[in-house]
Figure 1 (tube, one colour):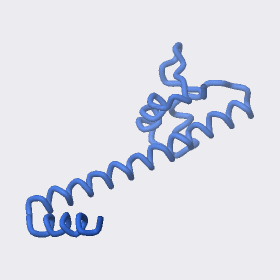
Figure 2: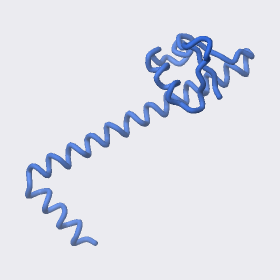
Figure 3: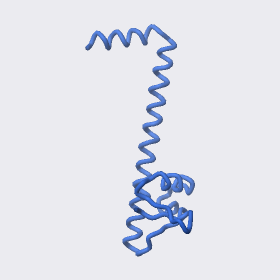
Length: 101
């Protein structure tokens, strides 16, 4: 196994174009991973806010602005994350309000 890895690193080290491509792939994957972590963190924050809010007030739906105000997440990001999260449902009567599923 080690000779294969050593051969791979020799190949990358001796070819500048391959080195650049591999480096770009690593940077791109790292950027994607960081974005994924941020989305997961903010989606969980929104979900927790919705579940606490429903338990404390009895109201199921919260507006995008109310969620944004409480969670300190920008309104456009709240709307994007809520629309992606399967645990969160949009109010069909008011397009900018959400509840946990």
